[in-house]
Image (cartoon, rainbow, N blue to C red; front, side):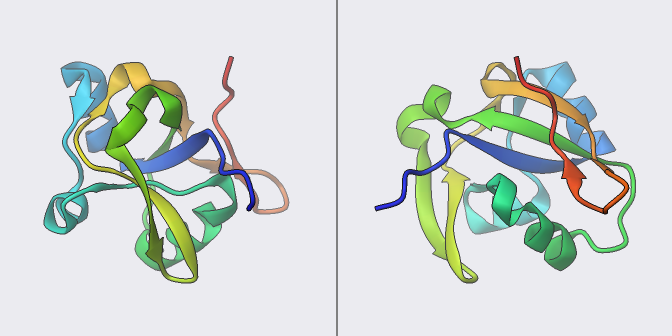
Length: 116
């Protein structure tokens, strides 16, 4: 069995990122609340998630989430062609180990937030 990553990523709008910073917790986007959990992606899944759910959107942010800090609220569940990490509960700011505006390098690859 392949070892699962310990960090996953939440794509947020600028308003959602500001709310997470101000409130110290994020209850989810409208899609998250509709589905009953907060959608995350691994680094390898980010491009597909961006293309499918955020195409054409600008001013996005990327939050690196420490999955171990969330313990049993994280479940790996099937979606599309693999398993995705989902948070069943709010995302607390203290589980976010880094965040930054979503940027791409000269090859178009997503730049991940720098974690300590």
